[in-house]
Amino acid sequence: MKTAPAGGTVRSARPTIGVIADDVTGGTDVAVALRRRGLRTLLFFGTPPPNEDLPPHDALVIALKTRMVPSLEAVDLSLEAHRWLQSRGVDLTYFKYCSTFDSTSSGNIGPVLDALVAALGAGIVVTTPSSPEHGRTQYAGQLFVGDRPLAESHMRHHPLTPMKDSDLRRLFAQQSPGKAVLINHESVRQGAHEIRHRADQAAASGARYAFVDAVSEDDLAQIGLVAVGERLVAGAAGLAGGIATAVTELFGRSDEGQPGRYTESGPAAVVAGSCSARTLEQIERMHRAGRPAYFLDAASIGDAEVLATNALEWFDGLPRNCSPIIYSSVEPVLLSRIQLQLGVQGSAQILEHATGLIAQGLVARGVKRLIAAGGETCGAVVTALGVTGGLVGNEADRGVPWIHIHGGQELFLLLKSGNFGDPDLLVRASAPMPEGN
Image (spheres, one colour):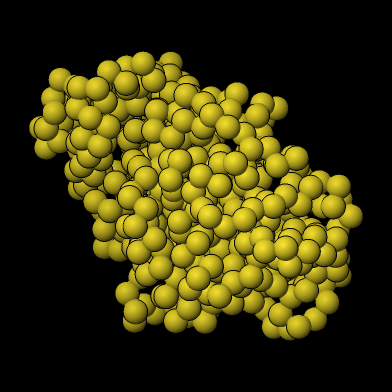
């Protein structure tokens, strides 16, 4: 071990970071946070096969689809990813969860972390959902969305994971028996040495998890200097970026000679399933821009294949290169009615299956830039297209990168979390291009 400039400790050699993300958009978000800071980062959708051939890398990111599945399934899938990462010599395992900490009262953040702690024999786990660039900060153990406590933000009315408490330790206590403590902002402001001291004190008292206040990128960089020496760390993309900052501060960038960025081109289409306020606003901007739009009405047509067939027939009647949107996103009141009629799981399964079929049909019809909005929607698209991974390309918005997919034909995917992006992101990312581009 050697001493970090700010007082934390890190390995004497550059550590390899392995990330397990609980959804597809979370995987892309954390991958770009690592790549932006100079780490050679490979992104995979699902656990790769044992014999996957890997180019030189500093970080491996596995994007799973475990946020909303039953806890036992989430644990099994996460442990499978963990075993693969360990087989590739990962030094630091990072469990990436959403920056709004959204999950059910029973999981899956707590159960997955408990399982990883046991598998790695990890000591105290440093964690924070803070991601200031996305307006998420932790102060006094409370999670804020912009200037509002989590429970007073739009997340209070989330249709699947309503967040009605802002206290991270109380939220986490519903999911895990592990003792969780707070390392407050006063300690963080004193730097990595004090954070390390407080974490060691907490571990000695029997704590398993330490939620660390962070309201700025500088805070995350200090936490990163501590976290880079751990076996297991957890948080949103913000802390992953702090760890990457620490690694490059201690060892320098290692991404020189990486493939150049690709220019995203070709016909575009958008598929959207998120019911978040931001995605609904982005869809409204698509309407205002005059883009052709098709609504997937699962309440009227409860058959995924019929929904997909009708949508693709509509697409076939459009002018070339018009960058349309096909969406199932609705306001919370209407969503509640649909879920009452079809059931929460039933409506989700119908729309995800339909979305996957639509994605296949759009790519078969020559779409080269496919934009997906919403974590479950992105997961359905990636699964249906059989995408296993790709190169992180240009960011269409902060934390929302294009992914260049390798395969028989050129394809660019933009996988957007429901709450991410400015209001014009979908309009801008799907802008029609001259024929031949």
